Image 1 (cartoon, helix red, strand yellow):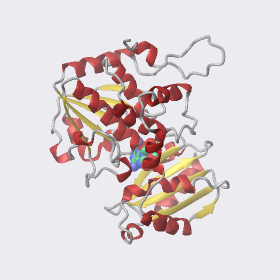
Image 2 (cartoon, rainbow, N blue to C red):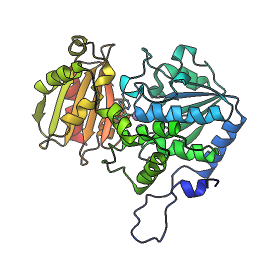
Image 3 (spheres, rainbow, N blue to C red):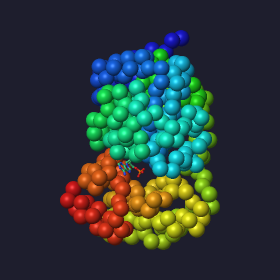
Length: 347
Ligand code: AMP
Ligand code: MN
Ligand code: MN
């Protein structure tokens, strides 16, 4: 049976009782058509996702890479971190042989596709490569998407970039196999907070059903993503929780390079700390400042809904979503938090 793309992309079921569908995918048909044309013409495609990749960024990129390779295209995939290292918790994703360090990424690709990056800044070292590329297809779901690139497959209503990638794959005539589905599921399940966030639409669940039907192991993926860590994580978490501060509806803490060095804990292992801090009943907003290997503070922020942390972080040079956003600070912890608090009062 040939899969029918139109059937698979979750068009709104108008008039059906009890459906609470989001509006039709916000990507214009003309943008899909242009993207398909550029891809079908290309022999080589260069893929890039945002720096410090999460599962949605890396999974979306690798899933696309699998499909392009099966179409006979030469694929390079990368992200522009100074230290090119796939976070341990994403090493289970298949297709890592496609990855190449940013230094070996084509300087001026004919066709580049970016994933989960709202702006060219988020490409880090690969920003100049995108600027020099002939065509750049941007696949993203951030409301703050800056409109960079030459073709935008951007839908702020999509729960994950992986949802747009599934559509792209099906429109390219590709099929979901277990490897592709594993990559996409990792993106979908993390960006929806395991189907807990308000972004979890019927379309997100239906996509999950299609992915799980390929035979992927949801239990193994969950274990890789959330249920394991090196022993040092517990010690660093203990230090972070020991310094946690609550006041004026904000709960926050920080983790230094020195905390991590004592246990040889890589920066990427800190991702889950915000999920523990943000559970605080007394706080509407949570923040965790994480010092990276270069000494900059990467700030993760979360809101329970009334505050738009995406707007606050955008004002601080970062970005993200209404309830989950981040920014980078080169100032001290105290100054960073003073600026964050000041903006929180204004929104
Ligand atoms: P995180 O706290 O790292 O899980 O990030 C939450 C959200 O904020 C994600 O959607 C990121 O894309 C976005 N984000 C995090 N850090 C930055 C940054 N420095 N600049 C722009 N967006 C960011
Ligand atoms: Mn992301
Ligand atoms: Mn995402």
